[in-house]
Image (cartoon, rainbow, N blue to C red; front, side, top):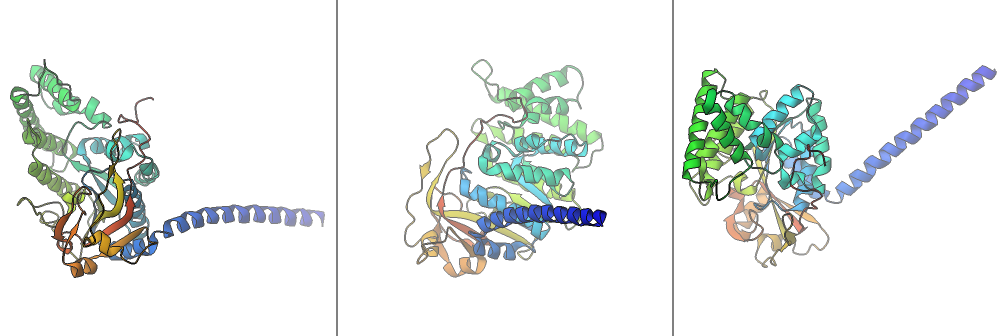
Length: 409
């Protein structure tokens, strides 16, 4: 009888402890969910529109200094992965450190700091990105998510691999003195070590182009497929130095390279993989309105509107800004602007989701959906499949400096 009583008491205590633990977990979930749901019927509408798509492009202001947008994009990414089955995410970040991250994940040596550094300072220096980085790393570590960068540029402040090992890896395909000289030149470019004594002039640019061409040919001789890590890095480096001039990077060449990278990276994924593409709206828009160069969303990805969605972001008011600079206050939205029209009669909503039908019904209207610093008249339904308009934007909360997290602080 005593043993029966002891057993019953023990089971009761264990059950009570488990119930309390479950209640605490549920309370945390409910707290998180209720916090998210303050934004939500609008977010739920957006998710319903894009959940079944094969590719979703999440845009943002071309200056990237947008904290509330970053919060919402981070939330959307997690919803699309957890609830809609998306299993690949591509950032408008240099391709090189993501290639190295892919190898580290395969070798089970990757760290969340390595992922943050690959994503780059535009986003990973912020408090808003911390939870997202942890979430993405865990998904990638468990082989539930593929992560890529699709930009060909070098010189990122946090990309440790590009700063310290890319030059050596690229020149490993060359031999002798030529390999040593090219390694010096590439390392100097990756770390932007130019001054009056060593200017970034046409002589050095030509030297870099010769090195890049030799590396590309050497990699091709290795019979590497066009989507292999070696071929992608060699090809991107070649295209980057070819696009460089005294004025900077040729914008159209960059656009073309990013498109081609998305296609190549997509070919590495299992068929029917659902992809999120993260970048500026100016790249994601469905039509090019300035040049004839087609962009990420059209032509190369070769998806119909049924399979793809482009979502932009704008704001009625607030500010935006980058590290160590005073915030830029948004000018008041004119009464006839898209942003003002959407909030007419609505004093409570913190954001509104304007779906494609609504965009179409508005016709040609002024909006700052690509660049928060300037309004532009467009029929936005031709450029976007949906637009999130925030009542108030703000700069991100920058919590760390522009240097690799992988380095000891």
